[in-house]
Length: 99
Image (cartoon, rainbow, N blue to C red; front, side):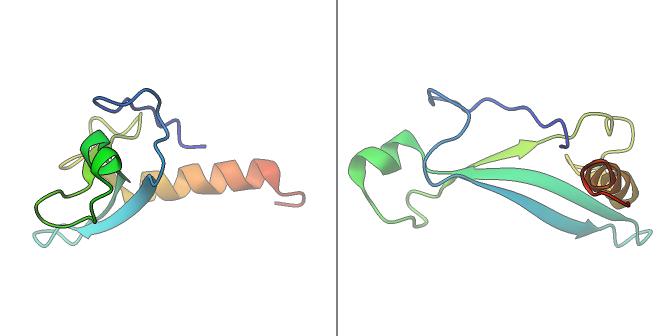
């Protein structure tokens, strides 16, 4: 829906067990502009092999997944909320009869 693509270090595929795609909302305090950063959190191979609880000694893997088309407007890997909102509206409008 958003055209996201990624590859994970030391992982055989893109969708590891226990992986989560998160949308982080950010506000630039200097100008009040709002952004969305897409981040993939996942278990590392070390965590899976050791069956150790997630803790500070073995934090989950974290990968910022940049949205295509936001390159010129992004801040720290985050896309302006206005662009993300338009993409969601367009994707849902195409799937929902009657708009």
